[in-house]
Length: 302
Image (tube, rainbow, N blue to C red; front, side, top):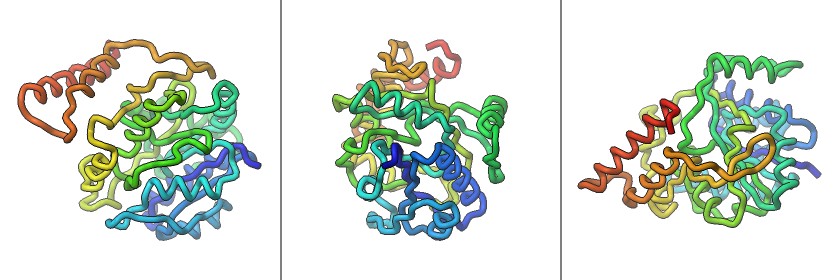
């Protein structure tokens, strides 16, 4: 019986850089030890060969939407059915985890039966395959300290939770914006411990372009992002890490402290219409609040 199952739905391995960073991510997951298994879900080009090369489990079948994009609900269901781990960790396939991830998760599990860990990432430019020999965590941390950039608290690239949670998820399109925000919203609405693990859990996002999407643009205004928002119940349910009620510090869970930034974010959420954009006084006030919050966040004054 494994203690943790890491699962993901990779992009095609046909692009050299995407293939490199995905292999880096998967190899980092395997570095957590023999109590961790890895499931790769989907039938994207090159995925079967990469799974065989890396010695991880490949689950080919996954339901897709009308655009041919894999469904988050199907990915999570496939993982739950195949997983041996008592804990599940969904991760985007460009995220590197450090070996202390599993001990940290088990420590939280000792404290709570139902919890979800999520958090910020550090963005880092990596163009070559990492060498996972002795001392690699310290070397990578040094690179993060010198070249990395902490990503804003807009969403989360990972969710770590006991396997019985998130049993029902709308049919979101993977790889488009919005679905991770609903995951945060859903956790906050439940009697679970919704936990921002950013202070204790360092994760590294390897920068990449969006050539796999139409016109090579980001996913924030992709048509399927708007479909995800509709499935979530509107933009008011697009929660961020700022909405989380708890945080992990030194291996212990504590209440998230009050801050002006979090207060302003709450006002933004109250003013947000169900659609992405609006007009009139309410919308102008929302924009002003958002600009103020971002300025305070940037200066660290909130």
